[in-house]
Length: 111
Length: 113
Image (cartoon, rainbow over all chains, first blue to last red):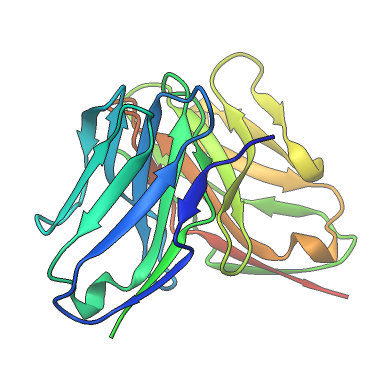
């Protein structure tokens, strides 16, 4: 069965650079969620989109923005990167807000 | 505010032994509850979920969980642990407002031969 696809899987950036993470939800899923998981931490909710509109916002820094496109894929844009942004970023998708299926994650390292 | 507590940071069990991972939640209404498993460097895999109805739910890989409203708990169990079960386990609550999940801090499971 198709799963959530995230790209890239690994990303290395320097401080103050920008990064764009992509998420392709499971076909027919209408909701996308972004989570950040720091080393040894539980995943923290960043933001979600339902039918291309932002539906909920968590602890997302102002330096980050995200959107969901017409084909339901989503992109998380991160600017002015800081060392503390180094983490595993998960995207999840669901249909009508039921159980979330997670992608494999993008490991971002900021040096 | 919603919260999820996993009291056990780390658990070690022998292969073949039974397992129970604890999860307590704080939420105003009956939430949607989930257990996820995460292997090192990997994504989160859904083990099982509770929405309503039968309070004992069966999941994949031989796991089950029981929702106890009176105790605000949703403990994960497995009768006989396999070495491949070693991983990090997260309990999660659906916040129901925008459907964001609140995760517990996770329980790391080590399985010894």
